[in-house]
Length: 499
Length: 103
Image 1 (cartoon, each protein chain N blue to C red):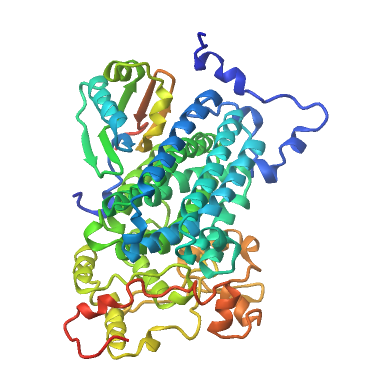
Image 2: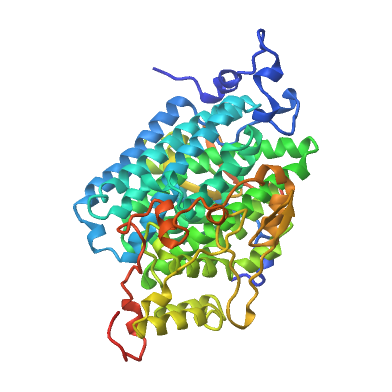
């Protein structure tokens, strides 16, 4: 049977801007849920989604994508890749699934916000497919790690992490609540689909896929790059929304939302993707450094797009570029040192060869971060593992809920950018995190970070043991050095037996 | 490698980023055929292939059909289109990658 061309019926079929009879337009689309900018309805009617699909096409294409992902998994499952995988790579998988799988469902709710409250018919239409996409991402990223649970209980955190009070879960929930569940449909289009999905998801779902292919984890590489093809489509919900806002005099407001989302994502990825690429991935298999991938996907690709659509680079751009050399190294040191508090086993990535690579990619690494690792190495060699483990908790930022980090060594520059607001002092890891808070203080004020809860007596006993219990970590879940310190003995002075 | 990191985003390169495979090879051939005046750079990283050219390029459905020797719906490209540089215009007969502005 001959089918009509999509373009012959598409505009009519998706035009659901009916005139309400029983409720007012404002009741149907409350500003708080639909559009904080309050752009008139007729202006939204010019919205033209650039990456179109129909339900028939969607089902056909998604079926093919799923068939590909699941058949690769089935075919390669017999090869038992995971049994022989480097422990650092296993940690990447645990971190990825725990940090991401359930947030995909949360992203589905954000897509649903746009599907119901989006002001443009085209936005509602594309977000309906986006909702189905995110449901797929949640399901498939719970299903794939599930078979590993019987072998390694840390994989159980694929499902557990986001239900826990682990610090990494608090940080992730806070960031995504800020750009997804806590915003109106128009803001979601800018902050989630534009600032997150045309930018940072490329790092974790394509950049990391390149490393996965090198490592030989074809199942994972194939899975995450398949997910990113959904993202590439529904991420385009944001672009026409941005254009309409700019055309209607809201450039400044739109820019602010994009800048907030970009920064929040950047900080989160500095602790997830940064250590994964520069420390956990086996040295011989690293496609590029984290910084090089960031330059490819974020600086080169995303920033250029920002300019093309009519926004400017964020006001903190120079700070961000400088941070590409530093932030994730500090985050990695923190995660490794506080390893009992995470559901994966952090790989130190600080053997002599790895340090040469780090020094090459980040000149000055040995004189800064390397100095900290020198102390850790000496302690392990001297049988003092206890000195490499935490007894207390770090100061964390009240915006990104990650440790406040700086550059160690002679350049020591760690600093608390604090702010007093309504009788409470808030601590921030950078001036940009503080700026985000200042844009809407009452939105963020009152939230208690892990350390705030600790100081308020909510974590008992008030020590690391109590904190681990509060975070839901059983002793068998707690992270350990991924290679059981084998890397330390690659240094020349074997003057002590193993710890 | 470009000089200053502050200038890296000042370029006009657009194009698709494909997942590898037979369809990607066909799509790259189609790009060459549909944009005869353009030069493409191809960066193959196994998990993805970054294809870029200056300012604008197009892939036509008809060209894909000719290369593959079978019926082809433009939407099938989505299976391998992991990302893209520039803006996109995805229609039933073609997909176009472009920038509005020139730097």
